Image: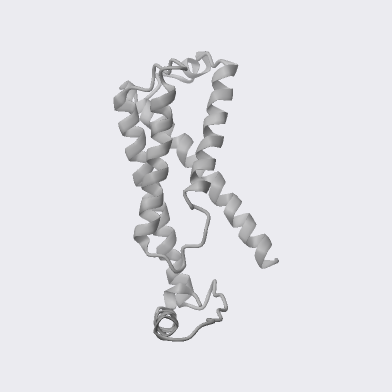
Length: 177
């Protein structure tokens, strides 16, 4: 498989995973904030009325979330960046996503979007994305130290900065270069 094709496939899988995470945390926050963690039966679930406009609104919201993730830098390489950069990106994205619901709850009369719901939603999404990204980062580090997922690198430059970069790359096997 071509390396570029594999990279595109992995980025699309990551985007799909992130949208699924938004959906699941949305539903979990809705259940927690409403106080009903279980449905009494399948019949009650099938009786629920779902309006077509709500499906379009939620689909548009998920597309907006995907755009926010992309703009916050979720799908760029983080090989040479410190973990704090990724934490900042996740914090910014989850705050923007929760703020979107906060701003849209009055014009669209989103009765479920209480302050309690927004807090649960933001906190669950933040913790969930942080855990998944940090576990993924550790797994990639593990595989790179064992010779998998490696990249070639040429450093063009001279002086102390180029030497410091070369030393860092040479000593940190987990970077995968």
